[in-house]
Image (cartoon, rainbow, N blue to C red; front, side, top):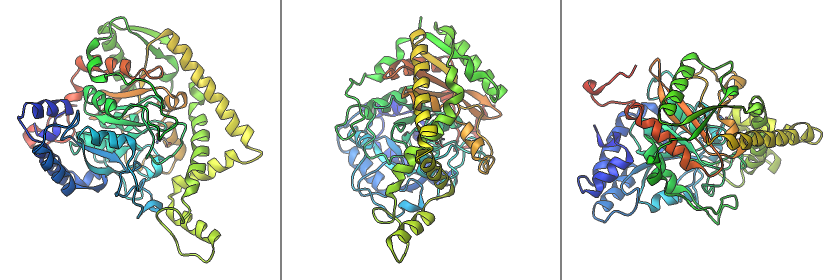
Length: 489
Ligand code: GLN
């Protein structure tokens, strides 16, 4: 196995025993990147800088839990001195003046950033097809989408380009691409990770989280990025558990709920079969499986697309041709706004700004925005009630596996409905994780686990227990040599 296909915890173990050096890991990751360019994980890469940094680390003692580990960062997180495009034309030429806290925390632990990953424009989408820079391909099947909006962060890890990566999740943008690319992807509790330096899409829903090859790696990354940050007033001053040391505690007696509303129409049969089998596995690990109800689930997508677009319309008002990036030539200021915004935003972003402006406008505010806020509270109540009865809620992550490129681009509603299982966690602010629970026609199927606020530890513990019963997490989408090309389906 190439070094770049190994997990972070394996690499860290080898580094600690001095069996390898950071530069060897970096060489392996960069040489993989040369072979996987067609998948288009990245908007920008920093190979020379990353190699130099790894070489310097060779000479020093290990710095932290991520020493010498190549990581990739979604291109909506700022890194000082580097471009941050959000995959939008409107931010072309913009250089970030500071570094996002979550990224800084990875750097403080010794991680080395190899590139900024491709995404749906301003994180609006479920397939990484709305990027101004073109789409990203699914590592398991090039004809299909990797999911979105953090598609590039997912593919970079699935291809072995990066050992781990960061994405952002507003309505599923970490968990859904993790599901479609066969990875572990975790959306932390709202407030667990600082959003400072994350370009805002919908501020009450956005949260940064990790992509990893397995649960232990996800625990290491989550620990590194979590914690209070004075620069983000929504970050919460709560103790950060030592996630990696808690994952192996087992799930004997844990109460796991299966919400009946998540297994109705629209779910693919094979996806359902994999998830049902996973639930059996969890039961065999000693968990107690219970039926629960989340009755307002059917309103989640509509509620989300009112609140998210309303917040987006306000957040994206700052891209006016004056402050950042693109500036079109114009005779007066109004013209400048119009021309810059018309040329700078793609269709999906425009659709959302228009929708968001509409639901906030006088006369419609009460009927749409205010009502959506009330329904959001009801959805939150559903979860509070359910978490009175169970510790973890298990569902599919996505109703289907990866779909064909272009299949949903002309039908926004169809695209929006693919988020049906992930959106509620953002509305409620609770943590959720997706992990691989099987394959259907060669494409990974994701299992989603959700828990009460700040209970990421129980998610990771449950996910780890599941991993021990299966070997899906050991499968790699990309192989260097034909004889290593294992078919998993
Ligand atoms: N797919 C959802 C959307 O289009 C979620 C995106 C996200 O989580 N950033 O809004």
